Image (cartoon, rainbow, N blue to C red; front, top):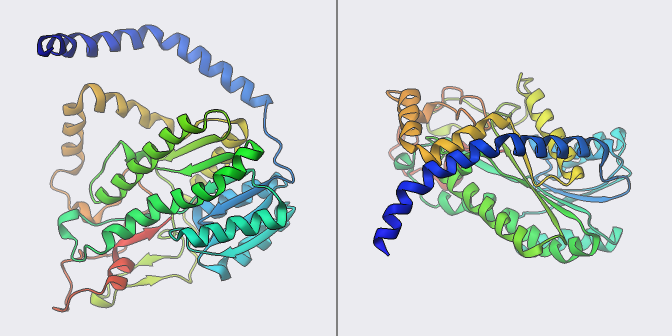
Length: 354
């Protein structure tokens, strides 16, 4: 068997590239036909019930507005209830038929069951479930001083999607509904200072790819992956250097140039979900690096070294990431206080909510 694998190792990679090159025109034609079909076919979302988790900030907020423009009924879920009320009012002005506000923590199954049941009790159905909750970080793995934040990242990015999906799935089957997932290009395009985030997103994407096979045609799944878009760090949750007392500044709103990209990504997500697209990618040119990772990983490694060689990666934001560079932020090991960094403070300093 070893000699068979040795031969296949030599033959399959170049043969696959040749087949891909020959099939590329056909695949492009099929994609063009699907695009044209999608221009004329849209699921009418008027009076349809859409549950959006992580609706209190950035991407979740913009997605809520896009559904509102289509006359949907919105169930907005997040921990920051006060902010949800303002977003709900904006959504009503934009055309949402009705808005329900629910304060809940999506990493707790009982709370997910509560807001799903509230939606079912009040509206009788769920048509789209948008899992927009996400949490990122900008520290190198070896610099971490508090390992208790590790499961917190997995809780938000993975279980915060799985639990709402688990509870809502029976109702989505009844309505032939759809699940929309806020993933990231980092699930296969790893970048420095984002190791745990990339791992969590990889687990998330693989979960939904498997779930897609299990639910078959009963429930649609749209996986959205993004490159550069804005987050709360760029829109009010900025970090400043104040030694051990460094913390989020949440109240000020800063108009950033990438707000337009964030709104555009939300528009593409909702349009893709209404067309029934399995994937929404923004921008799509990142896909070319997937070929390099599969067939020429050394080239990708050389590119990384060229881009990041000699650079303090803990002080830069990802090329495909979700935020602008931190404002004078310090490494988690460069604290002026000799005392251990409390978990809450550590989360404030080196993580970002999307």
